[in-house]
Length: 425
Image 1 (spheres, one colour):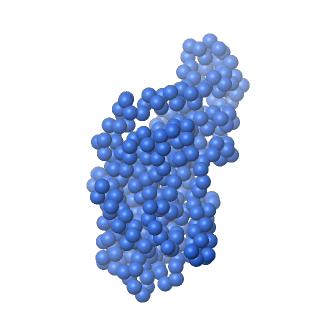
Image 2 (cartoon, rainbow, N blue to C red):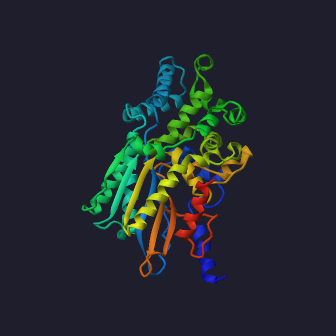
Image 3 (cartoon, one colour):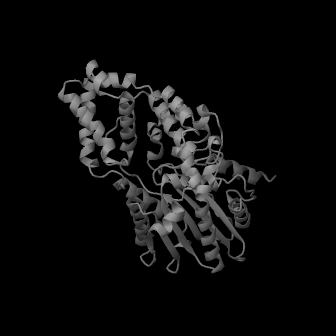
């Protein structure tokens, strides 16, 4: 094998987003990652992209993005914890640390009230940044005559994410025409879940009892609640320790997505954060990804979306055009899409629950504003010679089942053939 090719491949693998097995120490070092799907978009360490092979030029981008950073899904998540601490404070049941946490919660509530599930200002900035870097990397795609489409699910934060992304592109080239739509017409494939997948998630005899035992072993709120409350009788009669721990964990993980500069990670031990995250990661792995427990059910959820991706690419290739198709949805959509596309590290399947986090990690697949880009390049001398590159969160990533002699690039004919074979199963 050519020595230069070996070196190139090793460099490519080294630069993969999240390359290597997730470790406990990784989460100890960066507690924000325990936020899982609340992990704010990691834009600070995007590696340099591999040069485009000589003679090729970008002409099309197929994009799928999760909405940007948001507030916790419901005001109630903030308010129920705040009300509990307020009541305990009135009854002199809080420790000094508990009083301090209450004061922090009051400050957070000033920003978060009435914003449950809303796109945050950071979410807007994330989408604008991704759009700007896409434009600067591939200016050939965004010419005045580019054919552009943009669609989002019917959820407002997705539509606003689409708008922020498209507005930044139009600021960079005001002559771009980007029609934007958010309706059930697109929801049908952007946010598709099969009846079998929905039934599996809710069935009591599939995964829930094993998960219950896992959670029971990993959620230990005693130390935390005893550090926050000084009145043992109040703690006994008024506090559900596990519910409170989960509520504080949700607020702690969500702080990185909003403007208020406060943290709650100091009230947890590192092991507590890691264990709580393991439970959340477990649920997502089983319900949306490729855990061996679900028997590959979730592969079916994104087949309509993959068909749309292939059909849209075929259309622009057939017309000899250039441009981009931009799609915006949710974590529960990008997770099965990354799985079905067989992006490296996104489709591992194991059954041993203690090792789930080593096989699959939610913050690596679906952080806030997480995105998948398939960039198409055409040979200037031979328009039928098309190659593609896959990006996960703007980082080059491999598709191991598809063989290539030009990593991190792939011959489109090989990629298309492989994905068509998946759709026919």
